[in-house]
Image 1 (cartoon, rainbow, N blue to C red):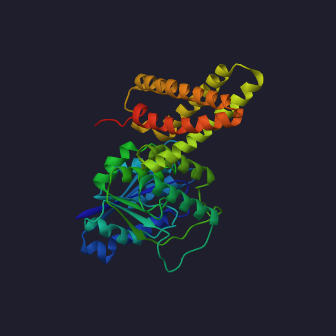
Image 2 (image 1 turned 90 degrees about the horizontal axis):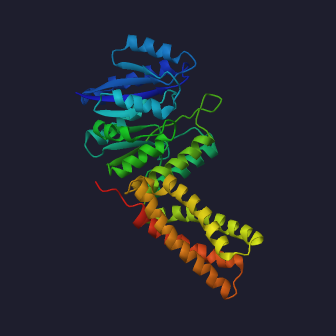
Image 3 (image 1 turned 60 degrees about the horizontal axis):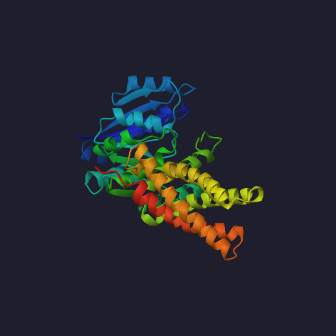
Length: 369
């Protein structure tokens, strides 16, 4: 007998929770589940709902032997509710089921097949693979989902079609290994867990699923700020293990921001001071500080090899090397007649390439296992 555990995060779902649980429980009586001796376990995690969701959940728990209910004392977010569920779920396969009835639980019959056949370790549903019909709703919501999926693929070298989908199904040992590493408490869970799946090199399958999205008037909760957080999560958790071209593109973004700061600071200082050495060094140090903060936030921090002191010393050495190069390139270009802007712009481009190489291969080395 195999068991499928479905984690159901609950937040203000009193209107759909009972109907959703009844619908999910029907799949246990499906012929496929009976033929393959699959039992069902539902883990409801109430995330401090303000309505009667928790009361309804506890009533369901009393009626159904295979329903467990857990709750948070404060609202933490969907990701936190899922992490609670992953800790207590006991099934051989562990999946996710939203409580809003946007998804069809019978699609789990398709999702579980690759796991039963040992073809996959993780299976994602996809709302964007071929379907007969679908409800048409928000363009920008779909655009955001597909854009974030594309960026995730670029940073993980995966080829999935729907990273933000709710339906994600894992072998127990896979999610039990991943769950302790998860940090995100809200919708940032989706890109974060996908990046960990890619890092673990688990076998990942996709299955087309049906999807009946609800509107914001009907209670949809994800919004633009969650999209921005997802973008941050892709860069933050995926940057250190992204393919080298993507790491360099991200560093170009970081370096470009710092180059603009360097140029602007130099031009401002040039208007108030004639001391070239002071102007170059001070502008460089300002941009270097911003560069370090962005590097440890978005790109290299998860691969730091040294302790904090050793990392700072290594970074200081790169500053001395690139600072000297920045000064001599700037001074040399000014000497041959270049304008302040072009002298600083060219030296900043040289610094962009040199800084990336030194940071990747000297400052933020990969940790040794």
